[in-house]
Image 1 (cartoon, rainbow, N blue to C red):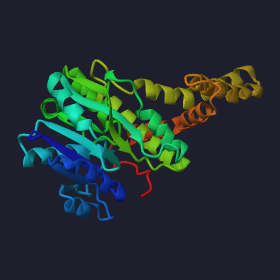
Image 2 (cartoon, helix red, strand yellow):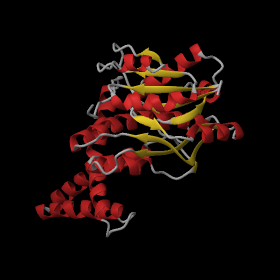
Image 3 (cartoon, rainbow, N blue to C red):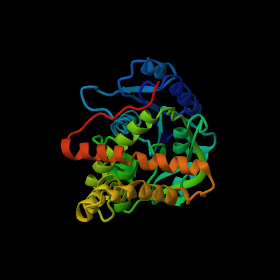
Length: 325
């Protein structure tokens, strides 16, 4: 425990931040809270709860990646003997027993740079968007390609590859994982509850904005890793381009070639078949799978808009906010 610390990041999380800090301070190890210009008293709350507060300079673009990078730097400045850091978002609560399972795993697996567990939603039935987030976190265990934002990381590994890229708006964990794997490190997900997350997404507009931010990060991270043996996000970007741009263009080309506007009637058929293909993974008789598949396909345009903004503007921006307080 002397070689272990927490880095918590957040912006205007309010009660969620209090619950997060309450769940981690029981270990009696260093806690660094990195605040992204909150105006709800979050920094003061964190100080009252025993955390060392790092206030990010709002004159520079703020995002989760920058928060984790600055938090880890500050942790090592205050506690240079730290060997492991548990990153956790301020809207999450640490699950009991996670640290007791993750630290021994890291000490036994010397090649592991990152270990994460099961992240689950606090209120998955509060909205279909929360439910989608819960399903997004539920990924297979074992050696994996990337972790999420909540994870235990080996500081030597972070130092070896340069830690988080503070210019990324999103997709920062897969980008870091790609560099770690390229350097010979391993990423693991173990079958242990890790954090309870409060997505608090209750509208399509919020879900759209989350996807817009994700698309920006998809392009940024693909560009950063394009020279590695295994660049990331290529398939996701191709999927967005295919369904939002290429498919309509092909059909419009057929209309011009055949001189038959009736070809456009194929658009709802093709997209319905794609939704059915996606829904079939969970079962065609499950109405929920049809709803979620429709939503995932519908925000492909948001992802593409975000990626296009990253391509055309080619400058660092603060992360898009989507969650209500």
